[in-house]
Image (cartoon, rainbow, N blue to C red):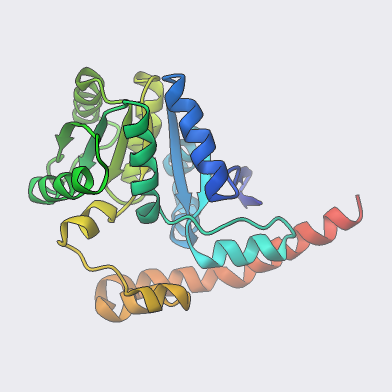
Length: 254
């Protein structure tokens, strides 16, 4: 599945859970770094207005579909992909790391959340080692000197896999920088996933996720903060669906 933002092509190159686990396991086994992005409609909105965000995305090795609209678009384009939310990817990737003896770094959120989520992960994943936890200060610049200090802490800890929980676009920008200056570390941007584990944020109930209504549950839970975001996402959906259909029609004529 391809998404086009201005002149940039974003290719969802990890179409399934099986492919994700295989690719990450291979990279970790070879101690080869990567940057994993989980694209959704909110990212598409932000990518349209930020050259810096687009540049960061271009440096990601692995891209998965995080959001039912992206999955629906892929089906319409005739290039189906599975739904892989960043929050749901944390435990499977942590289990791969534990099996391969790769330690973990947690970056983002708050010290309280990182401590609680660290306990949760080590309880759920036997043998998992958390090498370092870093909670950047408010106003953290993911491309500045402080970001380089964070990445040096990750590298010096010996961690081979780092979960970044800063929200878009900060987490993807930090991952892109990490891909450049710490090439042996794998970075996965996972949004609020650690806060869900820590219990400092509530995730939509399973029934809402199964009905593809997580966005509505979140919007109703925090209308002032998230309502405008989802309105912007809804505004671009018709055009994105039309682009997906054009991909399908173009493929039939080639």
